[in-house]
Image 1 (cartoon, rainbow, N blue to C red):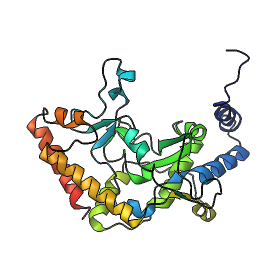
Image 2 (spheres, rainbow, N blue to C red):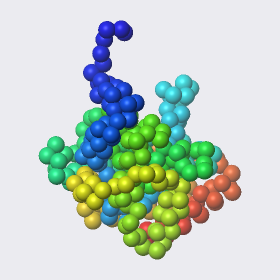
Image 3 (tube, helix red, strand yellow):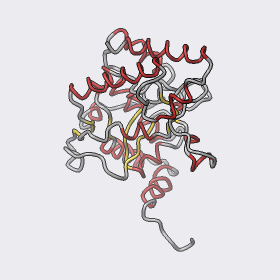
Length: 274
């Protein structure tokens, strides 16, 4: 109500009204500094081994009863066979990992409350669907970053300086990485769907001092093994549940042509993991 201030949102409103709306050079410097110093990225080696972490998952907030006002549908499949998630699976990805950072507030710690799993590219080039609705770009490693909540709101503004800087930073981190041939073709196809911000240059100094989650070689291999097992579960159309028992119950009811199409895509991707 009038005369009251919400302390949880004051930082966002200050940044939006004083820095973004005025779009001053001083404001842009501060935004760059905050995003550079406070963003947390998945490690480059994880990208090299698994460019798309969950190729059978799409974001669909309407799967939750609180949104659709009818029934809980999290984990059911959509008409194409993909697992409907409200970002729960994405948010859980780095939960067990510590942060490697020169920032004393981050170094050696794990995420707690107040951080948001963000999609760096909200929209895809030449497509009407959002990046999170596409099964390949939804969990594409360069498209995921974790930010403090109030800063994440700035990057949600389509075409904003904050969003474009985040995109340019992701490109500078991941696009030059050399991938094995079979995975490189997957990554190239996804990069083609992502616009590169214009007139945005990442300085050499900005490529240093970034924050990454620490994932050991064993941890990465465990992720590969888990992904292959879950793809095998989909192809078998039975056995262990896929995060949720709703998935296979709804998946088996799809037309055979739809199931074969999805299983062929997942088999092709799985073959690039070995």
